[in-house]
Length: 413
Image 1: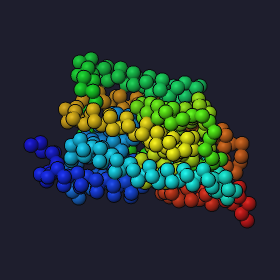
Image 2: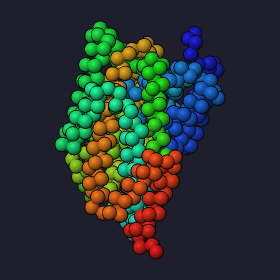
Image 3: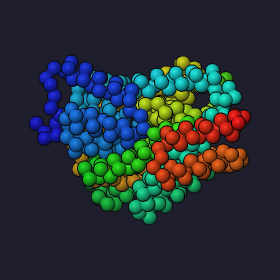
Image 4: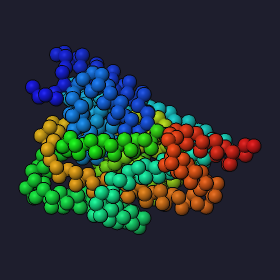
């Protein structure tokens, strides 16, 4: 038996019930973004239950960074597979996701019916710049990950320029992967890269995975909560559930990085290309995904409901999360075999640089809109300075943005 293999009871039914109970509880209580989710899982399955060693847990964290999709959700799916096989894989993912999806679904329903009330609109309008402030803080904390080498800095700057020029996110991420593959080939030699790719996917050595975990912690510290603004109401668009499913399945298949990167994809697909959302509604979607437990990717449920009601919410949810289940199902049996593949670091550096560039481009684009209103711009600047310069959590900044919105835009005296 492997040293890091989990110590498990013999009865598979006990294992499955245990997996369901653990991840349902985490799905109901895991606030605070991906780093907080990962920390909660580490405490639950390593420290308290000893399903696996800390080193093996870190390997799984590294594995999730090499496949697209929501990292904390994919980690839950990996852990479910490790504990209870294929049934555990499905149980862990479903139990972790369902509470968040249902809460976001309920929030979208309330948003559509009450979001146009004057006081609600004012509250959301004050929260909109708080969303961008949270993203600004995330960029500030994660800047270290793209300043480790001049080549990565250049790649990030080129990606920002391309995004602002209107180049597709898919093209930018694809180009970054090619750059990362070239760097890996140059560092490890063609044979090392080919042997790693032949195994399809995997993880990093433990020391590198710890570096990735630190990066995730920096991002999660920025993501305790956020909210946005926009005129509520289901869009009369003709965009149906099928289009929503395909769009979100495509996004979920190529999106690396945090839930904040999802904002860039949602904006390009549903604001610019399809024209079924406003910028404000895209921010609202990410906001609701932040203030509810579970992954920020549950924002897709919100978008789906706003665009096409209950059918749209179901289709968008299935589309955004299905690739994560598929990616983990394909990679889970290979994680231990790929533990020593060093080329993954170069791929991750390039993809992370492109992901941060997409976030930065969205901030620049939306900040231009906010700048036309000095009150909104002031909230953005103050919120950003508070988040970057103090230890105040983003949840409190969100609350402050809501109060400021009521005072500045709601006629409250």
